[in-house]
Length: 391
Ligand SMILES: Cc1cc2nc3c(=O)[nH]c(=O)nc-3n(C[C@H](O)[C@H](O)[C@H](O)COP(=O)(O)OP(=O)(O)OC[C@H]3O[C@@H](n4cnc5c(N)ncnc54)[C@H](O)[C@@H]3O)c2cc1C
Image 1 (cartoon, protein in one colour):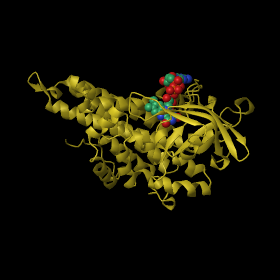
Image 2: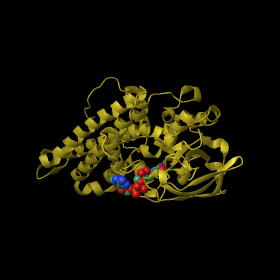
Image 3: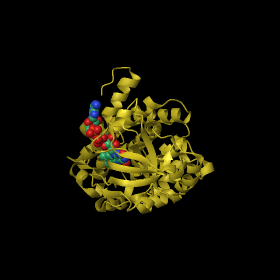
Image 4: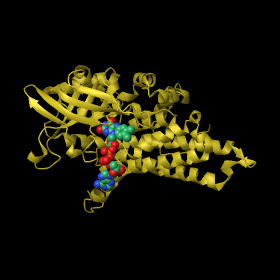
């Protein structure tokens, strides 16, 4: 398999890319197919990349991490997917801690960040989405009511991925009823829930089977007590803290989509060269060749956007618009690559041993989670172009 040509834009962590590729080479398609078939968590893969220090990339050195810029973290996730592995089951360990890092107090950071950096503490779960509120996050119903030294949590979350493979969970809950706040985004708070302590004390986590092996769950709270010291930042300001972390998440998800898309283009172009039908390689037909070429071009363009958003983020500049557009364009470019690869492989695209159908299912998620395409377009329409709020 020859490497796809990409636009050289200077030194973009070639050594880091190489070491991620080396780690990923130990986990071929057969490994991921087995995980998929058993809906299993890729424990061995996570251990490998944790030990290599990749998941602690964004944690400052003073807390035991690598202290790397966001662009480096993006490169790690892109390379994982480009190698045919799946970053979606580990990426959260990299960035959920950002809320703790930016808004937690020093004691909380000292207590948790070193363990997260080594992987000893898994902070892989982020509980925001609820079945009724959906994308309208400020309408969430999960309540946290202060009672002495703790908060009592009741309510329910859905699509809380990896909650069964996590020691800690970041939770967004309402601490002041919506009819008692000035803005509906006020009165929400963020908590770090220690799932090891919570077990059997008012929390029930049920796996939610989905079309991809995402280890996602439904989480039910019934009087769970969370120590008040686990509140992150100030009570009532949680929505802002969550928004703060979303730019980083969107840029990283964009990079993952680029990695997946490039894997698809590589697979499609290789197959189009090899597969002979009507006495010639199928890639000689423009109907087969052009969708792959277009997907490649669109991925390159989306990658520029991901890089720009990361550069702004790393420079400490406003990157909201760029992060959103990067995620939008990367998710769509990756999907086009997936469609091109699926069509190029004909019936074999459906055969699990080719890995196309598995990656195709995985790539579709980027258009829905962590935020759906329409909500990004609404952001761009309103906040970038100044049009009226559409929702
Ligand atoms: C595999 C997977 C993993 C996930 N992991 C997590 C996780 O770890 N933690 C977590 O909190 N959540 C997670 N999610 C949830 C995800 O963030 C939500 O599914 C997503 O934000 C959309 O919310 P919803 O499903 O409630 O859709 P809804 O809000 O019901 O929206 C349905 C559709 O309507 C559109 N829509 C709604 N309102 C408007 C409007 N005003 N204008 C235009 N279009 C609109 C949306 O764009 C969408 O296409 C995950 C989801 C999936 C599928």
